[in-house]
Image (tube, rainbow, N blue to C red; front, side, top):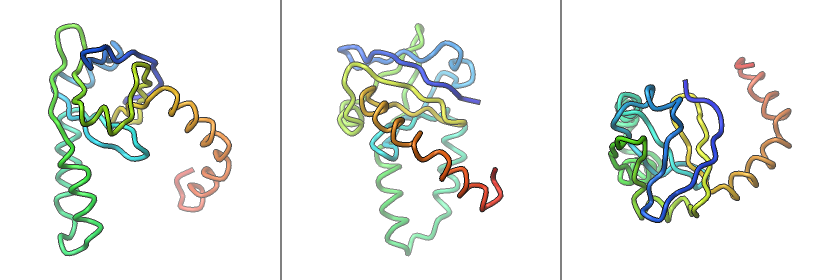
Length: 144
């Protein structure tokens, strides 16, 4: 399970080191794509296959489904983890995520989210203020 928050630097060549404690679980090939809230999503290859299988079963006749598939799948790139545990973030994804040199990698169960550090801190402060209300909504549907 991918959990926790790690601050890292995106180097001038757009390489990003993955936390060593996640590397074994992630494997050598990953998929990085546009995520929600202007962050990037990173999936282990096996998890990516599971998600694309589900997304591929959504009804093609619905405009929202087609739009989300285009957004999510067309922005996906398979990347390899190099010998020192780094991945290369493509330019178009770096631009989408508005990533500067300081980034945060957030472990979100089955994926990693890559955020610009300043935007992550702003988002985190906002969501922390809503935690009680979010927990109540999850309680209403039986999650908590």
